[in-house]
Image 1 (cartoon, one colour):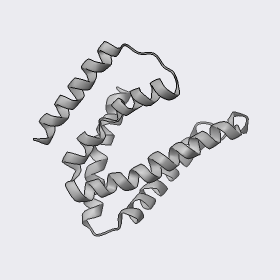
Image 2: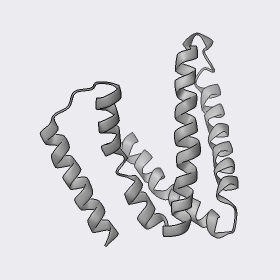
Image 3: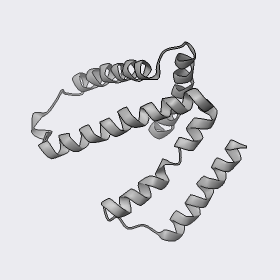
Image 4: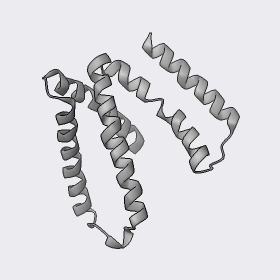
Length: 136
């Protein structure tokens, strides 16, 4: 149920993003404002769930999470908003939804995770077929 709720919210937010962009706001300002909203909500969540726990921090984990934030919350968001602006939400979101294919490759190369190649191949075909159908 939680995954469906997250998907519902992720499905709705591109409509808000595209609506904001249509008002003439720059993509950089839009991403900054959106990020402030996320920080405010996460600050509230941290306060309501027990606060920060300094013992959980390490230089390595903080560095990795900062890099992930810079990539996903910074660079990828700029590219995503540019796509929203150029081709719209209905085309951008399905295309960006192929990210699991890249996760599989990176997980195998970097994390040395094992997986069933037959299932990955079938899943990849289904994702690509779905993307082709949605883009027509």
